[in-house]
Length: 175
Image 1 (cartoon, rainbow, N blue to C red):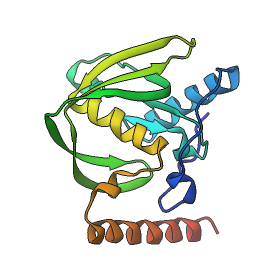
Image 2: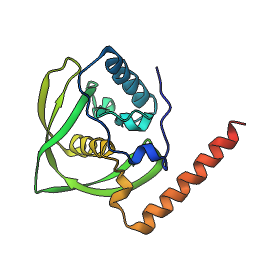
Image 3: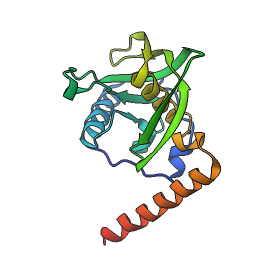
Image 4: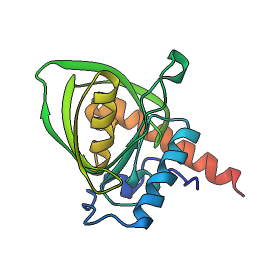
């Protein structure tokens, strides 16, 4: 089931999320809903707080079907970056909670991430390139941090004003 995505500014997007104590069928359904929502948006990552659920859960899929990649959906409960490279990468990032706004963000080029999968098994993997950027971006959401928090204050305020305007326009359209 598709879920509505929160648009910045929303106080839930700035909250630190709670760890998932144990997996339940409800959480597995939530993960499936998040994947459906992400693919439909379309996006390459989605964090639970973006749909108003303050739990440490992210989904991502940075595969490029147009380049012959098979879809590779990942569901991560309680993801943690356990190591990161000194080498940095700059990507133009966007966010489903900040539609149509993009900015260059510098992050570690390579990260090692540990998480619990949908079966409750501990997984670890090394990510680089777009996957590394995406997983860091989504984990930031779990800590109440948005990609615009990496920007200079003036640019961040400008984007926030655009989002306030967008939310007002969407609210008017509903009436």
